[in-house]
Length: 231
Image (tube, rainbow, N blue to C red; front, side, top):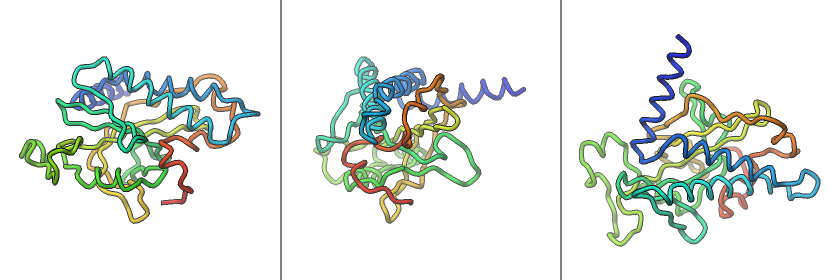
């Protein structure tokens, strides 16, 4: 019974990310690349947030390389610092962000938040997000765009939210559609969340090679330089 439910949850995840133009194996491979890059940091000599920076770069690089070979996907760097993958068929804009411990988990009405506050660019993109049900009813006309020349006109911004759990030795993730940012700039409300059935397990002592929180520094420079406060 448990195995059957797990299989159904896995199939549901695969089907739902496929609707966005993604594949589960692509996301898992990106998580693995992220953890490999983290392992390049020296416990004794690396900067405190270096493991997070390496992990973020490893994930973005892997995701970018894999999707570059897929139909309909291309990468843009918004404002020169924010890597976003665009799918012209599904109208999905995919970014990567560090999440809170609730990332990749169902916990009643509780939902994860972004680890770092977002800037004005992300805020504007999130404000234009449209619920999937509204898109199903109205199609592209559901999007209200002020400028036709906008590169992300008619796209929904989804975030691949990632959390590195040092105690459980696992990496949790989800692909979710932000609804709004709170007053401090954190994403805490979501139109939709797509969660895998199981986390990405980390074998060996990868997390043990660093003393700091493995999530510190994970994200684009424009975010991680901001002093972190609780949402």
